[in-house]
Length: 317
Image (cartoon, rainbow, N blue to C red; front, top):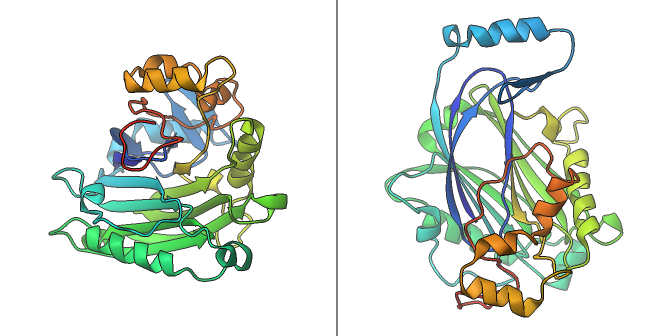
């Protein structure tokens, strides 16, 4: 998954997005990024908390008097590498057009499947190899600085920022939540990096949720656990809810439900590139429509085929 977000910093309000895929997909969004988490603007409807509603409304009406718009371009990539080592350059993955991103966020799942890494939480040589590949694949002609990285077993999240704007970045925190076996093992779960760009607080979440066709509720619970239990630097007050923007990427593992369609029919539709019929059976969309997961998130239009089970080197399932 490759996800571009173009945003500008503005007045108090909150936005968030969620995207999911195992493979590479590109989309472009326009964003207005803001700096106050106590007021949410969803179209014409306002949801406010506390006793300062009138103040917030007044500030919003006069926002042009005290806000300074600063554009920023954020690239998010998610990739389940299935324990494999990097064999190709990542230039085309991290430089998808002629406008290099200001912030590059890369999330891996199943980075290292070795038993010692899974059980002992050991350092992984594969992490170092992928980190080197990412560094070599950063857009040419632009200088980037590694802001932060965090790994939970096979879940790795890395954030790079343009060196020219690093002085605008502050309050960098990391957090992780394990949701694997007995709710403790780190083979499943999520990691997050939280940071400010000027007055806007952004969190990038990389997650790997429960697998298997029938484990829908387990995936729902994994999401809820990660969202509610994520703490940054062990600060109980420093949560995802306190962010202006949350971008959620990863291998969410929601499938095309086979309750009303067979695997053969799924493959036939995929080969004909018929996305619409497949989306009717999308487990994630179904759960979101029931308001069970990602309620305050926005997902962009899906314009790519299902990615599981995917045969490496081939175009279709």
